[in-house]
Image 1 (spheres, rainbow, N blue to C red):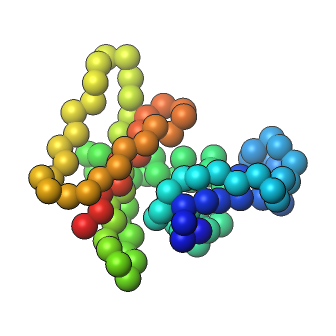
Image 2 (cartoon, rainbow, N blue to C red; image 1 turned 60 degrees about the vertical axis):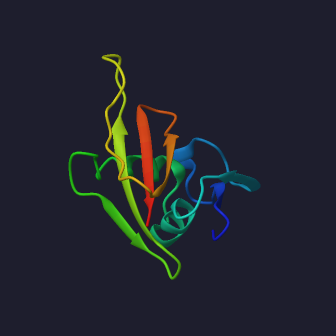
Length: 109
């Protein structure tokens, strides 16, 4: 978890992933997402839905670690053009598509 990897198809999640357990199959989702997924016991599908509860124009998910504070939010993408998102100057951040319908923005402070 600390290095950003998750077990992609954990036991007991077949009804969500539609794939039988594959304990050798890992996926990089990045930190702190891997830690959040582990703590909440969420599959990637569940985490994708979970993050949608923290939209850009709403309350953001905050995660604190001993090294840094993280602010995470979901940005829906549509066919009307690019999304405008304000990121504070001089902060580290990451943007990743969720492979469904939007992007996840992670600001590191």
